[in-house]
Image: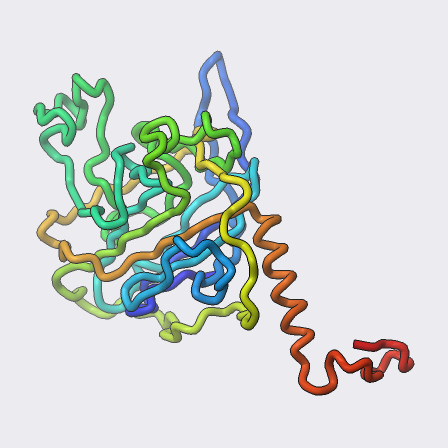
Length: 312
């Protein structure tokens, strides 16, 4: 299911949850694998679930909040392939995975997610890069920016934490705290959500790339309403770890940083819980919806074309 900004329905994304890849090794070294398959999962607006934890944010005009169910042992990837089709502007996106930038490993907060480019100096040590964005103090190469851009000449998606040039490590859903990337990098400051900040170019595109994306902002899911529940916390915490090595290029933004409006246009925040727990919530809401069937429901009246044996 598409996840969209309320104030710009053309800004949309999708979460996929395929089975996790198993690492492949050749001559004692792990080698990159192809991209995981499509496996879209349903996202539900937090606003339609009053029984969800009270400290989960609800949507505002420029922030859309959702909940998804994740299954331990699966992988995950984020699909932004519709963003280059935005009819008027280029679009960039920053992402926080449990409070850590998936491209840089730097700690983030949802309120501080600015766009930065790294073309000449290391953002951590301030020293000039050697060779291809190599920092001798970090002892690794840096990406040229901390965001994905619709202007880059590659497909706009991300399958994992950036590992090295042309490779990511698959987002891996795990219940083991010690395997969580954010748990290892920032410990108790980590969050249990995925946050995406979207930015537009200052100027409109030249020409019209519009290919008929529907403009409706109505979500394509069934809404279960009515009745407050009792859930006030997620019973099992899940972490996002770094799994098998995947071949994937993070495209360099050919535009200068001044191309982008530094004021984000909106934010998507995705909370998650174990998939079986979310399924129980959905099933309970569906049962409540069935019971709210007007005066025919709940009164023991025989209804339906089932031989007269079914009662409510």
